[in-house]
Amino acid sequence: MPRHVVAPLADLPEGSTRIVEVSGRSIGVLNVDGTFYAVRNVCPHHGAPLCLGPVSGTMLPSEPHQYVYEPDATIIRCPWHGYEFELATGRSVVGKRSLAVKTYRVAVEEDDVVLYA
Image (cartoon, rainbow, N blue to C red):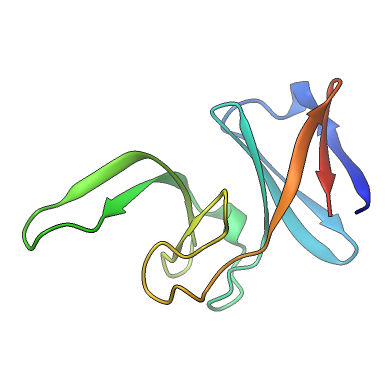
């Protein structure tokens, strides 16, 4: 799998996102609390720029009239229609479980953030 240096580690502090173009694909590299994730920057629902959406926790399945929020869940929410995807796996949180976004391996090597895509 080809290796692409995204940026020096110092240029991607916690809470930041860098969108890169690799072989004609837009990919977002995100630093969430010191953990790096890389996902395709296209929502599979209607093609929105997914990585412009917020990263947060999510609501968990619960009994009627009970609302359970999981703040430690790491999801990205589509800025257009609110579809939620797990950053680690790319799977949809609710709705169509077959709906998923492509994820990529990302690593910190020496002082660089490196994407394998």
